[in-house]
Image 1 (cartoon, helix red, strand yellow):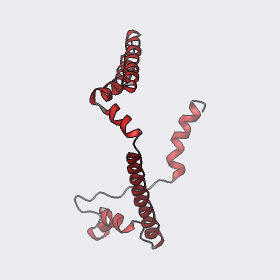
Image 2 (image 1 turned 180 degrees about the vertical axis):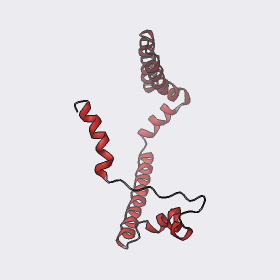
Image 3 (image 1 turned 30 degrees about the horizontal axis):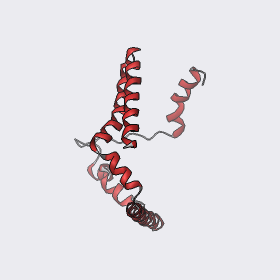
Image 4 (image 1 turned 135 degrees about the vertical axis):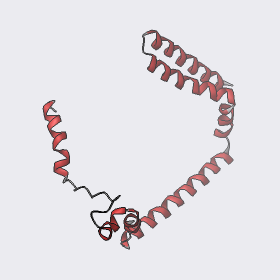
Length: 141
């Protein structure tokens, strides 16, 4: 019962702050504040606060969270090991990348065929950032 009161008070305070912000002609910010303020009110109205309070003091629920965490940890560990093995074996995803690129078969098609766009020359990293550096220098950064 205390949690519902606190959440309702937080929602009321947030809506009050949103009203003051709207009065100051900052409607976008007021709308965002009102959206955040309505979340605790919605949680109270749906009964999620009571469920959360019941869950927070339940040892079985905490054991369930522990099991979920262990499952997630095992899943992420296996993904990491698979990625390291594929990189060490030299796969590294190049098989999929080469098959997906339409330019891999471009030399066999010829340069003058219709529907095949010529490949653009790749720029070096120093050329890519040259114009950005010029803009930053212009603004004194």
